[in-house]
Length: 119
Image (cartoon, rainbow, N blue to C red; front, side, top):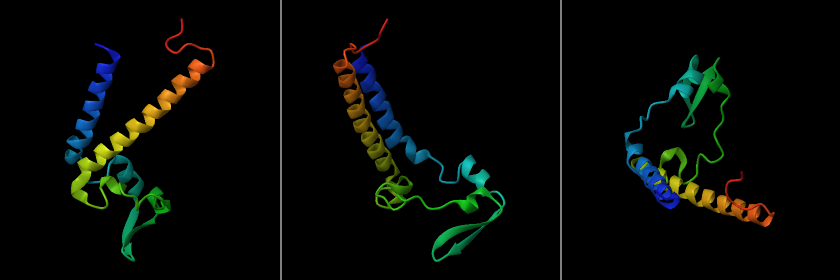
């Protein structure tokens, strides 16, 4: 199987996982979130959830991109669009990785080292 076919198969698998399997993901907190919230009291303050008490989560702050277009695995806040958010994320990652890999290969070829495996 050629390298191009393998790349295409991986891309198809990534898009299928992001677009289809993401709807099967559990919306309850994962192990890390649950572990850091142990010992906290949860309270609503001005419409947002605040953690209080002796736990690592009480020191947490909102991420600066929490209001972004794909925040919380949604598209513009629509929770039914989890798959769309996953596909957009995979597409963006693929574009950025492709650009970086091509720049690295070009740079490596320009430095006198032939691209490809070295003996």
